[in-house]
Length: 77
Image (cartoon, rainbow, N blue to C red; front, side, top):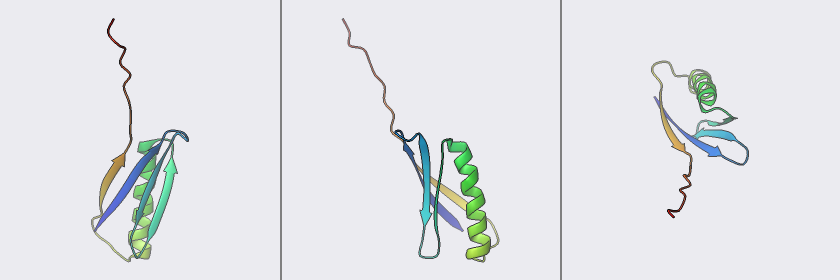
C-alpha cells in the first residue's frame, strides 16, 4: 500500500502542513518541525491503514515537499 502525502511550509505561520486523502480517508496534520510532523504522519497512516482500511503489510509513504526559499545577493560595486 502506498500513501502520497503533500507537505507544504507556511512561512508566515512557521508551520508545516501535511495532507493526504482518497475516497476512503482524509488526513491533515501540522507541526513546526518537518521531522516531528513526519513522525506524526507515520503514526496517523498506520492507524488509518490498520483501523479504517483494514490493511496489514508494508506501507510506503511518498513525500511531496513544497517549500520556497530565497538567497539575497549583494550587487557588485
